[in-house]
Amino acid sequence: PFSTVDLSNNVNLEELNMSGDALTSLDLQSNAQLLIIDVSAMNLETINLSGCTQLETLTLSSMQSLQSLDISSNTQLIEADLSGIRFIGQPNTVLESLDLSQNTNLELARIQYFDALTGLNIEGANALNSLHTYFMPNLDIDFNSNTNIKGLLLGGMAMETIDISQLSDLSYF
Image (cartoon, rainbow, N blue to C red; front, top):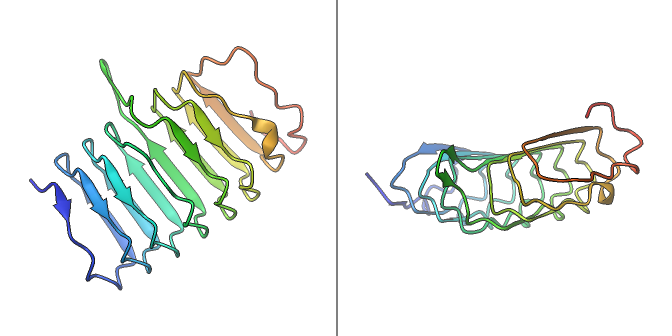
């Protein structure tokens, strides 16, 4: 099993689909042509997406060990599907915050199973029309900071009060 992969010379790579439980680090800063990334890696701690300026679809699944995620330079991102892991006794307790404010083209965000995630910033992600969040008991989010949301799905959350009063275009909840 491999813990790192060197893709620095694969500058024409447009799609990456990779899985591997031993993978701990992935540096994609040289892969500016990537449009689609789909990675499933339980032990992935770091991923560098700073050079992926054309990225449209990001799927990260089984992310038990992910330390942080910076997608601020991925301004062409349309869809983000980010998933921790849900095994009894093995929650993702590392990733604490996620900032989508620079992802101005993001239309759909699915984020689930990040037990330590306390902050999710969607202000500025003005194209975001569907937000799905599941099983993040500590999440604090201001839904009214992005009034373009038309679809909102929440599940397994510990929020006592949810203020969606400013989401006048909401069509499903």
